[in-house]
Image (cartoon, rainbow, N blue to C red; front, side, top):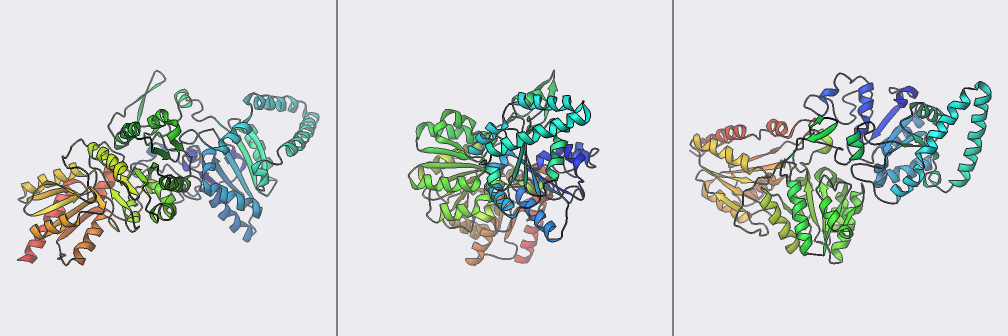
Length: 575
């Protein structure tokens, strides 16, 4: 609110890192009546998006990017002699990310006209960690001091000109002392003028300090402390739980969550604890996502073997490679969309030496509500080309547990186990996990559906519909996207001449495309002999997972119709 009092959101550039901080901003910049559609299909985004509003200057779904964006904007303004302001609102959790430090270093070096508002609530998604968090905690100082300071100012302001003179004089004395005491502070050393800490819930004080910052025309840090969930007691008391809560019911000022499922994430967390009880070499690592990944129980049980390193995906991947090189068994819990941020380290620090690091990739495939910034459907495509990688996807809770056990016992190279944010199925197979070997679930005379991951129930329903139409399609749980069961694929194509692949990832470069290339190389590919189902390579707006799948033709009725049509065409050509 203070930002919109002191700056022009059209001529000035207000940037949020990450975009969930922008909800109030959205309400006050023309989206009040649309706010009930937040994170829903055809509604407004959970993040700033310039395609949605002229008041949103850049998209920001991932953390630690706002300072680099601000730097680019400010350089353009300097080149065009534009005196408008560039303001970056950065959470203290975002300062754990390396990109933030890179930007701070360069902004200070260039002396750019950027105002950085450090929104310090001592939390990101999980409790902040690291030296920066401790430094900010010390700088945050006493809330009592800040309340007394504001009351002191209001008292003197009642005395008119003389009061304003006293305030100005004491501010100069305070600044001289602070400059002496804090001259070695990290922000000052990086070329920023440091102002604060300031109570972020005092709009008058915020407006005053922003006005002061505007006069510098050089890099300024406004250190603002706030309370996460301010005014909503349940959130204040448990900000982690309600960071991204499921729908809830408010009854007598208490929250009663409606979520009670057995998700892949929960199965992963429970299995990890069981395995770690028997193997002291297992080390858990994550990037500020311990609760979402259900690694909290592991961290409580084995605090010396758990490392939440903040928003530092690159760092975590390299650390895990080093641990593996030293004979430990590291497992990196990470969301698919954030795995992208450590891509170079996966190649350089894990795969070249073929180090046995295990990656548990949560939120893989289509993801509800968050739109283009948080989709997890690119991982198969970007991991497939890298040498020394093994990619698995479980179809049930039991399969995930088996895959984790197998990985810890058999890993000789980086292993990636990907699973979606959905309820896990509970079917089991007697077959043990073997590298690159699939499971023949049921035979078929007219073709086979090769399923990767959590789509087994969808595949079974599709096969039932096709059976009613007179098509007998068999079913295979392929387990491995890489290396896939080439012997099984050749045998089935030779038996029936018709294969279908189904995956929760982009078709371009995905599992289906690998099968296509393999069949073509082995001279088994005929027009219409392979049909691949997956996700189109596009950035979709926010919608539910089921809606994303339907949009890509991945509901049983849709797939059955497509398969029926192609099989008939294929049969006609064969005749």
